[in-house]
Length: 132
Image 1 (cartoon, helix red, strand yellow):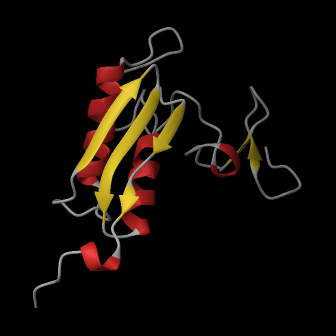
Image 2 (spheres, rainbow, N blue to C red; image 1 turned 180 degrees about the vertical axis):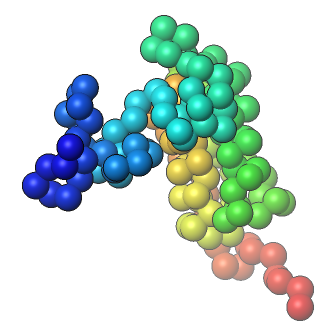
Image 3 (tube, rainbow, N blue to C red; image 1 turned 90 degrees about the vertical axis):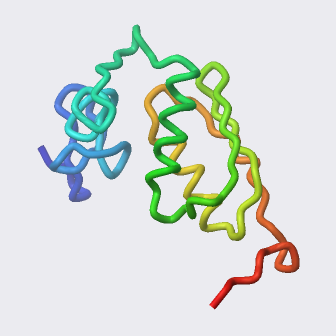
């Protein structure tokens, strides 16, 4: 049902969500399921609160997200490590857009509770000249 702000409310928990149920918070209210979640989404692993992914699973899913992200060039060298649901991103990228895209990719993985985006942005003189 809709609230007075144009959002839909989840009937079970009362969280605001989109009419389609995608995402979190004001854009959606799904937690661990739904069309784009782990129950039916790209991972399809069926995680529940009792069976969260391991750190190795989280690391592999973050790397897959980064590899599939069109905003991140294929030749960017990033290190990803997970520890108890916390993801650590390290490396150097040419601009802030790529740094933030990698952080966003990590947040979408089920089981991630925090992302430490320690990626550095290269200074202009350190960047590779583009070939034309």
